[in-house]
Amino acid sequence: MIKAIIYKEWLKTRYFVAFIVLVGLAIHIYSFLTIGHSFRNTGRAELWDLIVNRSHFIFPSLKYFPLFAGLLIGVTQMVPEMVDKRLKLTMHLPVREKTMTTYLIAYGLILLTTVFILFNVVLATFLHLNFAWEITATTLSTTLVWYLSGLAAYLLSVFCITEPTWKRRIPNILLSLLLLHFFFITDYPAAYGYFTFGLVLLILIYSTFIYNSIHRFKTGYQD
Amino acid sequence: MKIFNRIIILIAILAMAWGGPKLFRLVTDTSTRTPFVYYSCVDKTFCQMTFSDSGIVRSNKHGKVYNESEFDSILPMFYYRQLLAESRMPDTIKGKAINMRFIRGNSFFFRYRPNSKYTPSVKLFPLFEAIPKRLKLELPEDVFRMNNGIEFIQPETNELDVEKSKKYTSILLKKGYQAPARLVAGNPSTRKSYDNGYFIVDKNYEVFHLKQLNNRPFIKKTNIPANLKVKHIKVTEYASRAFYGFLWDKDNKMYLIHSQDYELIPIPTPPFNLEQDNMVIMANPFYWNISVINNAGKTCWAIDIDKQEKVDDITCLTPENSKVKYGKWIFPFELRFLSGKDNYVKPRFTWNIYSAIPFNLILMLIFVFIQYRRTKRWHIEAAIWTLFTGIFGLIACLFLKNKS
Image (cartoon, rainbow over all chains, first blue to last red):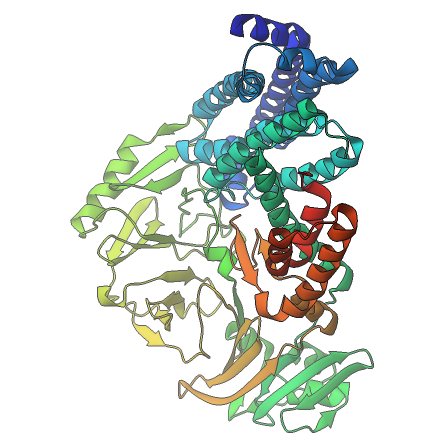
């Protein structure tokens, strides 16, 4: 049954996953070309100097990509379930409510993590070839926070979509916006160094929110 | 499922503890300008310029008020360009002949902010040629990192310059360097007239001076005592070339590193904490105005350079913004992620539990009343929760609590 559920989720999201991969590749290629342009016109030493001594960040265009990727997967996975309350069918399968919810969240999280790891490998390879490991580490620790924001966006979008009533969905959306902002407090490179583990912990906490929404959905809360 | 609902409420309270006070400050905050203070070598007392809605007031520490022109003339070391332009500059001060070159050559402005030290940084450093062929300093073609020795990396190829690294490392090790480096202090900018290189503090708190002279390494173990346990060094490149920079020891005591054999000269400063306080030094040929600025206000000492001692001091307290302080009564606690003291994101709580209790009590009664009218039941647990978490708890419970 798990295989069937995963296949169902895959059918809903596959075109959008392909879209995310294509957009992600386009953004990465554009960033690499921009840096190559700076290498040729400004000089490598000057660009290194900007990064090292002026705290310049060379991949600003990556900032909101993971966030939109997370939102897109959340929406495409859950909106079809909420149309005509189809999620009720899934929840009436002979699997515990919590277990089914876990499968649904795990699908999205694993999918997004796989895509994000792929992009991080591409990014790390480019950085490794062109920059010292100190610059690579600083850049990856900055982009890691943005990729974590993608996972948070996925979880919070599912939390809001699966909520059965608009009366509660609106506070949920406002709360989610505040919680997502935790990942974009500053643009200073590697500023989240001490708090990355805290962000991972927050993502784990956000994942528990969905159990509440789905429970409310299954129980038929009207408030 | 109750537990998941409680987690949502808890996280919502944290989110509101961050967003609520931030929004409140955005609406109520106004800037408070601390007065400009400067020691007058003419009046032999501190003079200040205060800014208010009614305008700028120029006075000395004892309350004597000056007009703009008089103020210029009692602070000739600060307004020397204006005085020279108006031919009002005295010929001598304290028995010394005064001209623009003398003032410029012996004046400097130094600023320290905690977030310049406590900040994420890439530990790569450009080593400038300190005796450049052309007068202007040029960005070197490599950068160095400190590990067991010194490694030079060339950005063009992203590869190590093995030969240069070996040359510098062997000299550094011969001088007694013990890895890892605790601090590498320099001024990695070409916007300076000369280069003082880097000061490196090793594992044993020994301080080494590193420069590149005529393409050759200059590495010297300084006589700065290791028992000072150097906490911070700020290298400066001022026109007088009299010193290499400033040094702070483990007790936040400040010294000047004299360019004559690295002699350390203690500098009297107001109480200062490297982690918390800003420091500004406005130096002229006669006095150094050393200001320590923090949330409480600004304390400035005037130091006589010849005697190396404090001659006067002044303290200006920061007035509390009357509207902002209401926040303490409304919000029982506040969560911030940023601080002016560093560039790291981390949770920082400010607790106002006691000052917010009266407001929380009112909110609790409102909550109990609303809930009783809705459900005809007393929600004791949620009421106690509101008493401690105040407006955040009330909003979270009203909008996010599941009905049982």
